[in-house]
Length: 406
Image 1 (cartoon, one colour):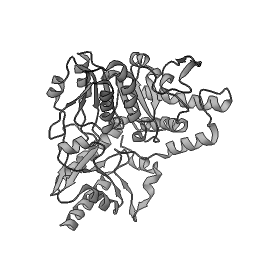
Image 2: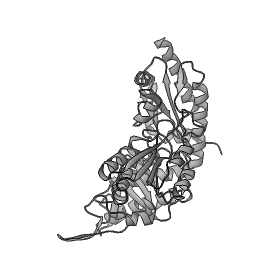
Image 3: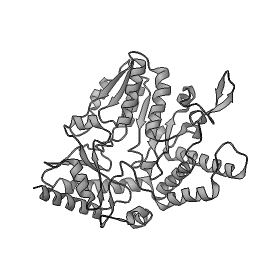
Image 4: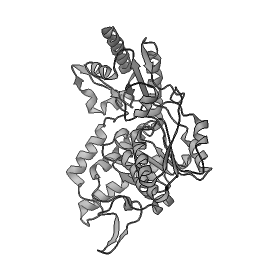
């Protein structure tokens, strides 16, 4: 079956517009993906027909809203093959999920002198929460190195797994480089020493099939907005035994069983971690995005994006003065590069004049930029709706930009 690219593109209304009198080419998907009509219409219809607060009302609208909201939990459970829906906790995004684990599991289990192991290619969201925990508890943050291709040096990672290591927290796919880590192998090595593992899947999950039971990770975090869903909604997967043992993260409504002025008792999973009125409509939209992805097939999307990456990489390597940052053997749909004598911010601005949206900066991965000794990179990142024709426009625009700067 051929990949239905024209049908997919027609589903994304934002792609129909022009930027500076040029057709919009959106290559900033690693930052956030655009939304299909199916998601937009779902949210609009929910507000028009079904909106009410969830879990608290016996009236029809509340029951409808609650049913739609909880149905998304079941969809996410199936999407990542969790053992049951209690293992899916709704959060604002991957960042909140990591902070939740750090401030619940981490504070309860990681003590003075213990070690937390991350990698050199982490997003700030998988660095700063662990630094904060180390400051609070007196633990030590260790970093597994990578090589100049942007690949984890696995032997060094294994050496850093010691009796002092109490948690491993690693990215599945680097947002700055596209490098895909061998997370299943890393998890097995950590588990051999009884070390739990959190996987930051924010970048990987839109581009590859994720099966948390096959990976055997203890925690997996991801955001909706990178999965063609609204912003402000994401999920934490945690093995039930871990989540049950963890204390609540936020206090308030909907996470309690009983409250008196002397004592409160807490709800069971997953509601123990979901205090307050949630982002109801955005959660329902998240479900519509999962339905949309499933209708196309994550494997088909992954194959399409890989084809784009290979095509773009081959074209980019022919441009004199273009330097690709991150050339791991296994990569997702990200092409980060620099140009001789041209700052990445200038690249981004000039490409925008041609209607091409890319990301220019440190990509919330300053240690990665420091490692490669660059202030920033220009990052092209692919989504399900991008095409080779768009890549051709990009390559031509970059070539012309080099000519302008001489």
